[in-house]
Every structure is written in C-alpha cells, then in structure tokens.
Amino acid sequence: MTVFKAYDVRAVYPEPLCEKTARKIGLATGRLMLAEADGEKTIVVGHDMRLSSPSLVEALKDGLLEVGCEVIDVGLVDTPFIAFAVNHLNAIGGIQTTASHNPAQYNGFKICRAKAKPVGMGTGLEKIQMMAEDTDDPTISAVRGTEKSIDLWEAYRDHVFTYLDPKIQTGETVIRAAVDASNGMAGTMVPKLFRNVKGLELIEINFENDKGTFVHEPNPLVDANLQQTIDAVKEHHCHLGICFDGDADRCMVVDEKGKIVGCDLITAWLAPKFLANEENGSIVYDLRSSHAVAKAIESAGGSSVRSRVGHVFMKQAMAEHNAPFGGELSGHFYFRDNFYADSGAMAFAAVVTAIANCEQSLSEQISPHQQYSQSGEINFEADDKDGAMAMLVAAFPDATVDRLDGVTVDCGDWWCNVRASNTEPLLRLNLEAATPENVAARVEEVSQLLGTRVDH
Image (tube, rainbow, N blue to C red; front, side, top):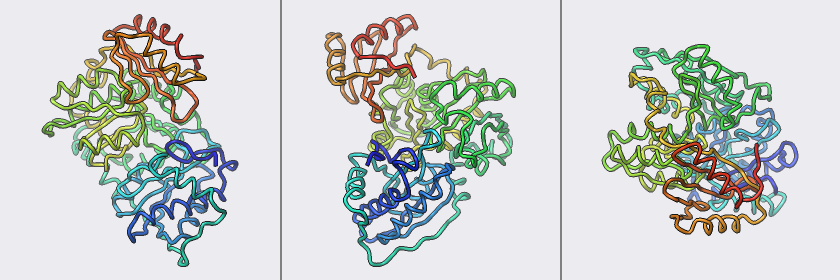
C-alpha cells in the first residue's frame, strides 16, 4: 500500500486512502497491539477537522472492534491530545486520524503504543503494513469489541496548564498573543484551553476549521504562511505570535517586532528555564540546530544531547536521558511531564510563561542566542544520495565528521549537515557559519557536490 510512510500513514483521499483501507489498518493495528498487550484491550482514537476524517475514523474503529479491541473515542482533538489520553486511560495504544500539515485532500493515521510510544517504520508500522496487505479480512476474534466516547478536555486542560504560569491563569500578568490556527485543530484546542484564561489576550486568526479548506497551507515552516501572524503582531502590539500546523503538534514563534524566531533558538532560550530545578539535567535537540543551542544548555549547567531528526528518535533520547525538555528545528517541542511527547499547546504555555517572567521583550531575550548565521534547510535532488554525501566528506579531509544522521561536516568556522529526507526523495542541507557572507560562500561550494537544488 502506498499509504504507508516513514512515520505514519498518509495519502490522498479517497484514492489511495479510502474507508476500506482504513478498516484494514484498524484490523492490523488491533492485531499488533492485542498481541503485545498481555490481555489489555483499550485503544484510544480521535480525529482532526478534515472533511474525510469522520468516515475514515468510523472505518478504522470498525476494524479495531472486529478484532476485539475496546475502543474509546475522544472525538475531535489535536494530535497531542491522543498521547495524553493514552496515558490518562492506561490504554495499550492510540490512533489519530490526521494528515498534519498536508493539503486538504490528504488524510492519514498517526499511531502510538502504550505510554504514547510512537509507531513508525522499524518500530511496528512495517508489521501493520504487512498484515493490512496480507488478506482482505484478517479477523481474529469471535467476540467483537465495544466502543464508548469520553470527553477529556477538562483533564487535558489541567495537564497542559502545568506549564502555564499561575500569574497568567489568574490575570495578575497579561500577555497579548496573535494565534494563527491555520484552519486546523488549534481552532478547536486553543478556545477549549486558553480562550478564557484571564491573563491571555488572544488575537485569533484562521480559527474556522469546519469547511475543509485552508486560507494558507497549514505548515508554519514556510515563511509565507506566517505573514498573517506577523501582520497581527504588529497591528495589535502583541508580545508574541504563534502559528500552529494542521494537527497542532507543531508551532512557530514570532517576536513582538514581527520577526520569525527559529525553533532551535526557542530551544536555546527555554533550555535554562527547564534546567533550573535539575541536577545534572539534559536537554535534547536535533542535530540540525544551531551550535548556540549546545552553548546555552552547557552555560546553564546542563548536558546537551544531539538527536537524529524525527519524533521517534527525539522521544527515545528524551527518555534515555530523562530530559525535561527537547526541541526540533521543525517546531516540535518535547516535555518529560508529557510522557516525553511533543505538544503544541504546552509549547505555547511554556513560551508565554517565559515571556511573563522576564521584563525584557521576546526579541531581547532571544538576542544573546543569535550568534551565528544559518542557511535554512535547502533541498537537492540527487540520483546517488550516498555517493553525494561521500563526495562531501572527501572534499573536506581536515573536517570533523560524524554520521549520527546523514553526515555532519564541521570545519571549525562553519559546519553543515546533509541527510536524506525520510518523507521525500531529496537530500536536505543545513549549514551554519559566523557571517551571512561565509554561509553564502559555503552553500555555493557545498551545493556543487549535492545535485540539483530544489527551491520550494
């Protein structure tokens, strides 16, 4: 099935992803989780706002019920809600029907095991794919499971608010924030959690999420998609702006001047706050991040832990090091007290809390971490990806090289990481140096080795 990707199930609806396929995925996922669960049977399901989600989640549930799972439907929720619900209900797994930041014609499923441990290729998704493709109807239970619906929003709110300063909750401190929900699940999540908080003045943008359309692509990593947030911050004199992706597990931050703040710099800025009450604490960050991140962590007395890109690896590193916080360049922020999972809602709470507890503006607080210039992620089409990376290493024989994820080449006054995309047939380059001029020169030099540059 072409619907199976590296981290989840995702494809265009209704072809190739349709209700029949969704039911097969429910059957296969139920079989896998029941086989691993030692008698427990509860699986949590939820769905996003896409017009195809209600019928797909019904077909998915039918497959789960057919193999004997006990299904708890938590309804229309953001993706991080599922991680919370799985742990709150001690379920053996959870499935969110969503296509995250993809265009409106897409949909899919994000799957996790007990304790919200992610299921991707190499951690179980390949088994689900094999079983789903094995037979038209792999029924294994003579007793059909049962289904019930539960509203967990109040419990979820209490959970998220462990990261929101009480001064904001009571209105003692007031923060004005422009929030772009991208016509996605933040349009449901933000009102339920944050709209009535006394210390939050919200400028709400694109909160309508029942039409199946997006005013802009629900991907906050594309600068153009942040323009409405930037404009609202300036017009309403906000302390910050936040733009969420489609399923509200990722977000980007805009400072009070309307400048986009890189997610690695957000990690560098927040890291010392999470280390304040830790002894020999660790912070996890993905290896594409600025060297400023490691400096900030180590200056605060913590240990910096580089991770491979992707939530599977970030969560694993978080758990291994008992890290209170972690951040990815892509806008995923991870929290120990959220079962090491990422949460857009908690990231928002943590950011406004940090702003509330400092007299400086957000831009002033970020400024010390802006020590380097960065290329941003640049994509290349390469017929021989391994060969291109080998040429890169050979071109700089005096550099320090590591292969944690792709190849990282560090020449002292500049460094770069090149890795194969997990989701597209591309090589991805991230490069950092002391000055914009050096970045431009080194990007030009490295680009000759990597193939055809793709600007999108």
